[in-house]
Length: 176
Image (cartoon, rainbow, N blue to C red; front, side, top):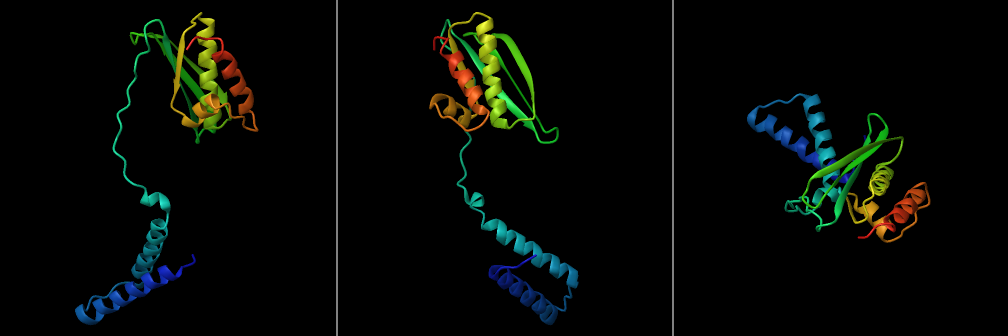
């Protein structure tokens, strides 16, 4: 482990404090405890430099399902990735304007990123929507990145391009 100047200054302060405890209060600490404290202090110092530690706290925002207008159905899809299984899957459901659950779906994708899983979920839901004969669709997902790629017609340089093309083609077949 390498110590920065900040860490060395912190170590110096801890050593000085430990020495004062011995001289003025006759409190002796074990060297391994002092080393452990110095290393812990160095780790905390490094952590404090991380900009994520200084993010402003945000107030909780309540999110709830909002039914679509009468005559529409709403598709909610989601993707997931398991780092343990190294596998992705997706699923979702379709509800009517009263909130009644009409049908659900899942798809096992295999090895893929969470972004790809989100897109697979949307494509699978739109295909099911079309197969069931629905024409008026509102589609929702929780991946802001995926939504932006679909809506802003961004084109990534990977296999997401084919999924995005399919999603856009399917969406063009529905009223929104």
